Length: 359
Image 1 (tube, rainbow, N blue to C red):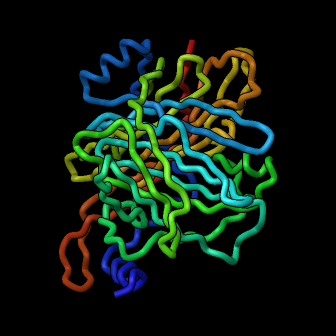
Image 2 (image 1 turned 90 degrees about the vertical axis):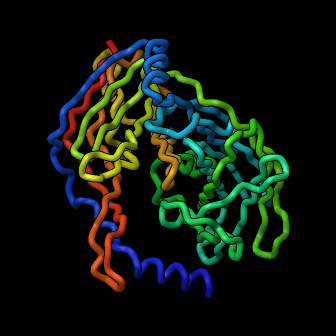
Image 3 (image 1 turned 90 degrees about the horizontal axis):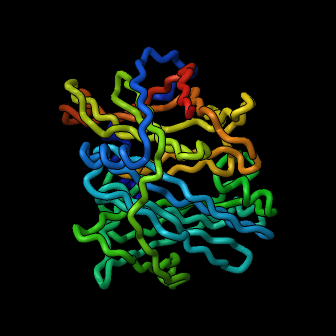
């Protein structure tokens, strides 16, 4: 049975997720705001078994290099949040390559970008990423369905090139400014051992089984950098935003808790241009597109945003206009075999007027 046949059968055996709402629905949610100094926030987080962390975002482009350190919080994680201390970057001919990642609980998500100065739309790229803790290979999962499906090793991951012209946020902005035209993005998930090592090794292999890159990735515990914390309750669960002491960086996460109805909130997303930073003068600044980054899979959900780097005045408030929540629930399946299946869906809340004052 080929991988494609397997995927087709899997798609037929599960209900498709509902389409996102066409318009942003008004949120009938209540806000539970709290502002806590960083040390008190970290202590409270430990007491509540909520891990605060940091995610590492890097963008490299020809002519300049800059690194922005982010932070993130994770609710109900099974273990500490770790980040790749420094993204591994190299070149393959004219291609710029970047491997970065973050872990949430027992899962590690690694993201591989291959960036080309040419339009490569007719050619697909296939890579297999083998990751080791010492001499022991990590168990890999299939990220295609945002769920943990063990990878059985019979097929590497193939992805098509995407033009950078239509992408307006994330590391793609910096690459476009440097003259690159297209990129391939591949996501790989792994299950970490109980004793997580401080360093992992990896091998990047092409379709012919030839090694194209080998290296190491240092994992470091994420640092609690949040000075401001603000939570809001929705019908699906609670979402928390953490803001850095200077007000220029924020992260959003969902509390992964199942409610009495059996609904499990699994993730939360911000929308580009729906995050606004308000300066001390009252001037409003939209989020910096090049700083808008997410590490997202079925097990790892980290959403990040930042103020534009050219803003010089202090930030007095952060406003969030909309969020999208992802959740799972039990649903009746009337197809072959019948029974109850675990379905997935999402809901968008708009017109939030969610203001986090830093004064």
